[in-house]
Image 1 (cartoon, rainbow over the protein chains, first blue to last red):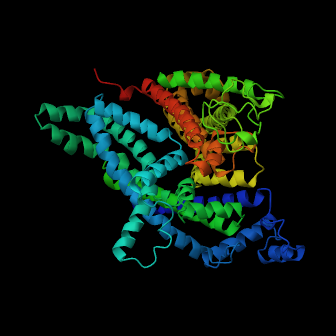
Image 2: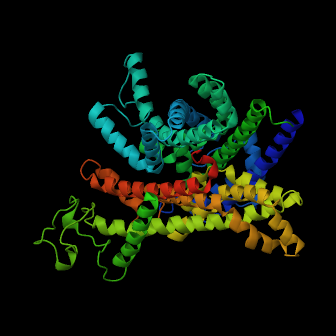
Image 3: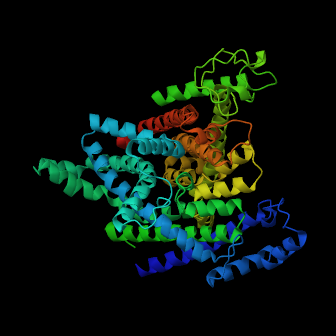
Length: 319
Length: 288
């Protein structure tokens, strides 16, 4: 077990190193320079452009820039090129905004998809199964921005609930109960939107796993022995069907950064997705590179955790 | 099979749309700006006194209404249909070709010459570490906007799934007798991979390709919505939606029409892909 952990960590560190090189190359080899952001701005004289380039080491060769950037990253000194604030500070602040969205979305997704999927599998071919399948297909295919606008129109005109942004502008110093309710209202719609796609995909996957397990011989034996139906489904079939989902749990970690750019743009939610999008437009290389790096760390940590969980949960795996 | 039916209908409509909207004097002109006819609802007649004769729409009525510059939304949707179709097919074509190639090499030379296999799998892991929408957004925002760039970029970022499928299939196909027979006959490696093994490994690739087309169309619509799609005045469904979001209460047809169109097309591809998967996968069939 320990050798597996050790090998895994070494391999992932090497992958991380290569990811950092590739992302650096992609950004620096793309046409256009950060100093070209505002060519019409009269204050952007050639001297300022020169100073800009010297200050951010843009005139040095690529590998020197690479070393400078990662040295700054690991000592926590990287600064954004747009507004000179510390990159890690900005990321942390936006991360705290994205976090509730992510947590609520994940909770909604995972608590709703299991019952739907299991019931679809148990009553296969029935009305419930067919309508759940139809809705799943619908939710997978609907473009996110379209569905967001439809939901916004519906919720705003019928329930008169505020939806855009983190909290209502001008709420001032209302009582803390009001402020909590306000936050919850604002949080609800974006996380429901983020969860719908996930519920559709996950419930279909739960259904297909349950179907595969229910076709196995040991389930047939349990039924033949006279075990009550409920126990057959939940004690024997479900436990074995859950195996891949335990490992999937580790892989949702990268979703933290993924946090849809589109949903955050529509709801003006100040999250990490939007920050990365604005950084790409402003050619703010430190932010883009740092977000890439953090996302790569999360992906590798997620796969590592899911491998470990798989080891723990499935006794057939021996190392 | 519903999926296949809708998909063929869409294909014909897109081809028809391409024919009808391009050229110097197209039948349905998507770019003709008529500022006196802004935001007219669908199925409304043009105001014949104020329109010049060439501005009157071909059918005598604005089938889907007009947008905020007075352009005929029906013509723009037809033009956008072709873009969506091309982006979907070309992007998936690129990703499937790369995926088959990488997966084939990696699966065939798997256990014996592990270096090639490990190298390719590490490369797949590295590419998986980038959040794909961001990668596409980064490249599309930094490169000059054009339809070909978008297709190539979407293709270059979605080959990882196909590679994994092909590699898994190859690892199991490699132990079969026909491969051993081919080796014994002295057929060289490349011919075995491309001529004998790949046709047998195509089943999961086809399924993931069909679903990949749906995802590519959605991604392209998302990129157009954010402003990074095909450059204007060429219309795509995402850009019609994006222009229409300012008038969502005044002109809801600008939001609902392209939205439902994207929904139906993507739904048909997804249904088609799932139908393929059910046919090709014996484990999920009903037990008799």
